[in-house]
Length: 279
Image (cartoon, rainbow, N blue to C red):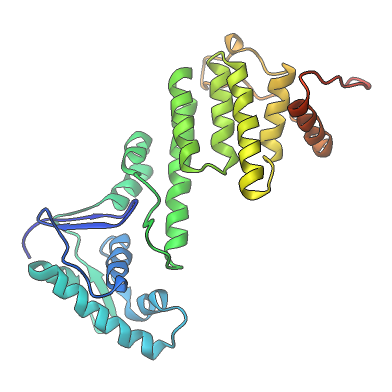
């Protein structure tokens, strides 16, 4: 086995053999076979398991027959590096990743070793964005969650201006998730721009309703209400040690419906007066 192999799984899958694109495969299944084996990091996988993942709606015998054809297709495309596709025994397949680079595996390693900046730099788009196979969905979702968690940790540790940039990037990765928007609201507030923090919520609520029919979750709405009502400490009052964020104020426990009503009223009116007993 000679030469280098590069497999990029984030975004649209790309494979290069000695800096040349992998020759065209006869079927997309061969491409997904390579991706599936690469994600296993060189560990053997049973043929039955692989066949079941690639052909979930096909009987086992037919799926294994299909797999043999796809294995031959991938070997042909790999050419001089076909020895990488190994059969440790009759019932398993493995892919030799020595002298190779796989962006998703490097990402996983960065997450495990606590290197969020390296991890987010490797994340260039959803894993296997061009793959609609069922097995790819949990793999894709797991990497997205890990990436968003890395952005969240970086945002918490960053200065306000940098935190705004990081939270905005996370929001672009997951435009319909609340967590990155809360980070962006908090970061904008820390940067001294309350109007921007409030606008993040309003824009998110409008886009979310138009695209999904949903409204922001209670935690996001609660943050908006507290920002709008001035019950969060000002950025100057932040606690510097241990965290970039002020200590959170207790949420409106048991008042979820009322919180949503207040948030809706604040979206429609500049001033809302709440009347009732304190406490």
